[in-house]
Image (cartoon, rainbow, N blue to C red; front, side, top):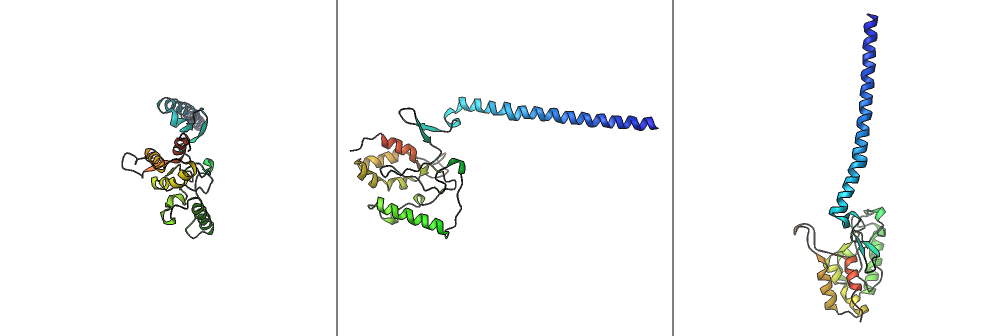
Length: 206
């Protein structure tokens, strides 16, 4: 009877040890499969199928120098360039998000008032009631690289006055860089500000 009990205990101990080894082996297999092979395979496929997107959708100037990503907005302060949406995180990609301030938040109200004041100084030709809301509001991520076509068009008079480039040339440029809805159905028409400014910089000022 004692021997029988000892045999059962030994079998139970061996069974537990076998399960433990099996779990360890499976863990190692999945670590190698999911932690090494899959990421390397995904990266290799992405580099072949969509190299630009895989490397951050970077945009380069004529000299081959990276000046930004078409996925992340930038703070263009030069009045002779098209300006982006405001960003409460100063367009820092590592801090994606927004403060989620309500419409009565004093900080947001002050920021909006300051922007409107600056807008009126920089764009005296454009009535305040023509100021598009996307130029004074923060996107959900704070990194939106796009503005609406209307938000680009209302900046044309300022840029034309500063550069001497005819307004109709600038308007045609905005239309050229206006992107349609995704699949023709989703989202709104939009203009990538970095791409637009890159094209603008190629037009000689008068």
